[in-house]
Image 1 (cartoon, rainbow, N blue to C red):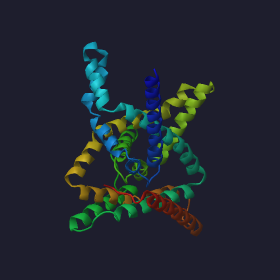
Image 2 (cartoon, rainbow, N blue to C red):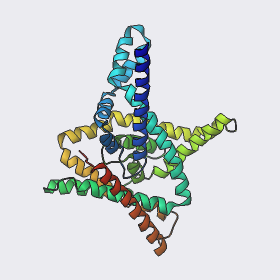
Image 3 (cartoon, rainbow, N blue to C red):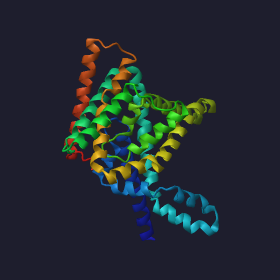
Image 4 (cartoon, rainbow, N blue to C red):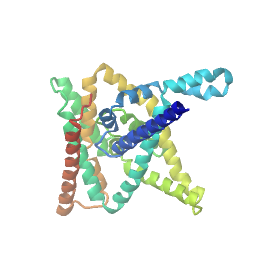
Length: 320
C-alpha cells in the first residue's frame, strides 16, 4: 500500500513538473523572438519532445481510435505508450494555459499601448537574430545565400509584397500549421511566425474573446452564439497545428537532417527579416513622428536587453 501511494505521488509530481515545462514553453512561444524549442533544450526535455512528436503519426492515432474494439485494445495501448501522451498532454495543457494568459495581456496592450508592445517585440526579434547568427558559421557562398534568402523572404512577406495564399479559414489553418511547426525549432518562435504573416494580433484577440465568452457562459451571463465565432477560429487554429505536426514539422526535420547548416541559416534569416514586422502594427494607429520613433526605439532597446539577459543566464542559445 505504501509503495502504491508513493508511486501515485511520484506520478502526480511528474505530471505537475511537465505541466510547469509547458507553462515555460508556452510563454516563450507566445512571445516573438523567444523560442519554445530553446526552452525545451535549456530545461532538458527537447529530445523527449522530438521523440514524442515524431511518434505522433496518423497510423498510431488511428490505432488509438480503433481501441473501442476489444481485439485491438492492446494495439491502442501500445500506440499510446509510443506517442508518450503521458508527457505530451500535460505539456500541451501547460502551453495552452500560458498562451491563454498571455493572449489576454497582448490584446489589452495592443489596444492601449501599441507602441510599447510592438517596439518591445521588435527588440526581442532583432536581438534573437543577433544571438542566433553569431552561433552559426558563414564559410561559403551557400551559407550567405541561405541566410540572405530567408531574410529577403521574411522582409517581402512582412511588407505584403508577397501575399500568402488563402484568407479567412484557410489562412487560420495555415497559421496554426506554421506556428506549431516552429515550436520544435530552437530559436524560432511560433508568435514570430504569426506576426510575420499578420495574424498575431487577430488570433490573440479571438482567443481572448473565446475565453471571455466561455467564462460568461459558465457564470450564466453569456450565450453560446457569443462563443461560436471566436471558438471556430480557435478550433481551426488547433486543427491546423495538428496538421502541421504531421506534415510541415516533418519536412523541416528532414531538411535539418540533410543540410543542417543551410536550413538553420535560412531559418535564422527568417527571424532577421521579421524584425520590422511589428512596426507595421504601430503604423496602423500612429503617424511616425519623432516622439513615436523615439518611444519605439526605447522599447526596442528594452526588448533587446531582455533577450540578451536571457541569453546570458542560459549560457548562450544554441540552435543545434
